[in-house]
Image (tube, rainbow over all chains, first blue to last red; front, side):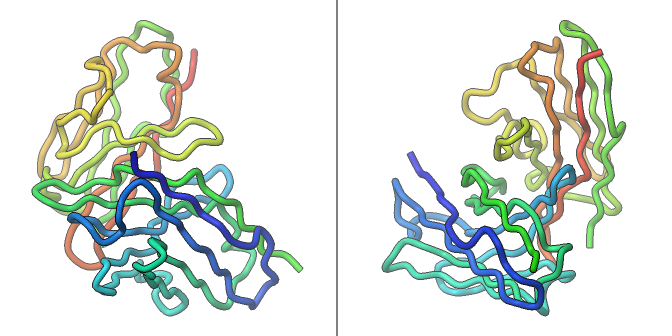
Length: 121
Length: 109
């Protein structure tokens, strides 16, 4: 059973960089047809896709966040990471990592439990 | 960017009733790349339907998906108490790649 677990600071100051890591267990991050993604959800609001990475290092980002986002992967640690720069209060949200299965059909099949990140001084 | 519009925003129904949720895309979406998720408070979303109409593993058959092109529907044939939650549609396509609908909350009437 694949499991994903987010980790990182729960509080980030405005203008700083938010950094989160997702650790994958129960399977290799390098195996299969999967993209590894970050999604966020402000309190009481909907889901916003941030971006995805393939184990080759190939990335795609949400255009609305592209200038501030970097997603990277460390296959040796079975982890992938998110960096979001120049954060403001609008970046306060629960951040989820998730596995996006892509093949004939495409969908998120496994999600982390989510981690709340608050941007505040 | 493909925009997904879900309606209604809130659906107030009683257990045992039928729920019909709509997801409309701003341009055509491949059925292969349309999925539905259920989210309960404090939990991560859970996959219900993929490929517009295929149920995910362990999902009861009271949940069904249909549609094509720009109009997709999630139907819950008879609401159980555990079905009251927020539902999201999601599409995957060419750049920029992926969007979610705004969600439909199914609440107890």
